[in-house]
Image (cartoon, rainbow, N blue to C red):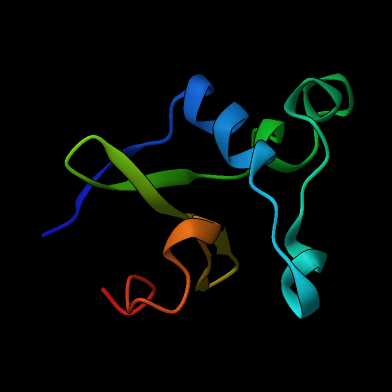
Amino acid sequence: MLECHKTTEDEKRIICEWKYDGEYAIYNSIPYEKQVETQRGFANPKNNYYSFCDGATLVGYINLIEKDSEAIFGIGVNPAYCNQGFGKK
Protein backbone atom coordinates (compact mmCIF):
# COMPACT_ATOMS: atom_id res chain seq x y z
CA MET A 1 0.00 0.00 0.00
CA LEU A 2 1.31 3.44 -0.90
CA GLU A 3 1.61 6.11 1.75
CA CYS A 4 0.84 9.75 0.94
CA HIS A 5 2.18 12.99 2.40
CA LYS A 6 2.74 16.63 1.39
CA THR A 7 5.74 16.73 -0.95
CA THR A 8 8.90 17.92 0.79
CA GLU A 9 11.46 20.32 -0.68
CA ASP A 10 13.94 17.43 -1.01
CA GLU A 11 11.36 15.36 -2.89
CA LYS A 12 10.66 18.26 -5.26
CA ARG A 13 14.36 18.39 -6.09
CA ILE A 14 14.43 14.62 -6.67
CA ILE A 15 11.34 14.71 -8.90
CA CYS A 16 12.87 17.51 -11.00
CA GLU A 17 15.83 15.20 -11.67
CA TRP A 18 13.67 12.40 -13.04
CA LYS A 19 14.26 11.88 -16.76
CA TYR A 20 11.80 10.20 -19.08
CA ASP A 21 12.60 8.68 -22.48
CA GLY A 22 10.78 8.75 -25.80
CA GLU A 23 7.31 10.22 -25.94
CA TYR A 24 7.35 10.80 -22.16
CA ALA A 25 10.36 13.15 -22.39
CA ILE A 26 7.88 16.06 -22.49
CA TYR A 27 7.50 15.47 -18.73
CA ASN A 28 11.19 16.15 -18.03
CA SER A 29 11.47 19.12 -15.72
CA ILE A 30 13.78 22.08 -15.42
CA PRO A 31 15.98 22.20 -12.29
CA TYR A 32 14.11 22.97 -9.08
CA GLU A 33 16.35 25.97 -8.32
CA LYS A 34 15.21 27.56 -11.61
CA GLN A 35 11.58 26.90 -10.67
CA VAL A 36 12.16 28.61 -7.31
CA GLU A 37 13.59 31.66 -9.10
CA THR A 38 10.51 31.95 -11.32
CA GLN A 39 7.91 30.66 -8.82
CA ARG A 40 6.75 28.10 -11.40
CA GLY A 41 6.19 24.38 -11.42
CA PHE A 42 6.98 22.78 -8.09
CA ALA A 43 7.73 26.22 -6.60
CA ASN A 44 4.38 27.75 -7.59
CA PRO A 45 2.52 28.39 -4.32
CA LYS A 46 -0.83 27.71 -6.07
CA ASN A 47 0.15 24.07 -6.61
CA ASN A 48 -0.48 21.39 -4.00
CA TYR A 49 1.90 18.46 -4.39
CA TYR A 50 1.55 15.17 -2.55
CA SER A 51 4.08 12.35 -2.72
CA PHE A 52 3.33 8.65 -2.78
CA CYS A 53 5.89 6.28 -1.31
CA ASP A 54 6.26 2.53 -1.14
CA GLY A 55 8.21 2.32 2.10
CA ALA A 56 11.14 4.71 1.69
CA THR A 57 10.86 4.73 -2.13
CA LEU A 58 9.28 7.77 -3.82
CA VAL A 59 7.22 6.25 -6.62
CA GLY A 60 5.15 9.25 -7.66
CA TYR A 61 3.22 12.38 -6.86
CA ILE A 62 0.05 14.26 -7.63
CA ASN A 63 -0.62 17.96 -8.03
CA LEU A 64 -4.07 18.87 -6.72
CA ILE A 65 -5.45 22.17 -8.00
CA GLU A 66 -8.76 23.75 -7.05
CA LYS A 67 -10.24 25.73 -9.92
CA ASP A 68 -13.65 27.33 -9.56
CA SER A 69 -15.94 24.44 -8.61
CA GLU A 70 -13.58 21.73 -9.87
CA ALA A 71 -10.63 19.79 -8.53
CA ILE A 72 -7.94 18.98 -11.08
CA PHE A 73 -5.01 16.69 -10.44
CA GLY A 74 -1.97 15.63 -12.38
CA ILE A 75 -0.10 12.42 -11.79
CA GLY A 76 3.65 11.89 -12.06
CA VAL A 77 5.38 8.52 -11.69
CA ASN A 78 9.06 7.90 -11.07
CA PRO A 79 10.46 6.75 -14.45
CA ALA A 80 11.88 3.63 -12.77
CA TYR A 81 8.30 2.63 -11.86
CA CYS A 82 6.43 3.51 -15.06
CA ASN A 83 4.22 0.78 -16.55
CA GLN A 84 4.04 -1.10 -13.25
CA GLY A 85 0.51 -0.05 -12.23
CA PHE A 86 1.50 2.62 -9.69
CA GLY A 87 -0.45 5.34 -11.53
CA LYS A 88 -3.65 3.39 -10.92
CA LYS A 89 -2.89 2.87 -7.23
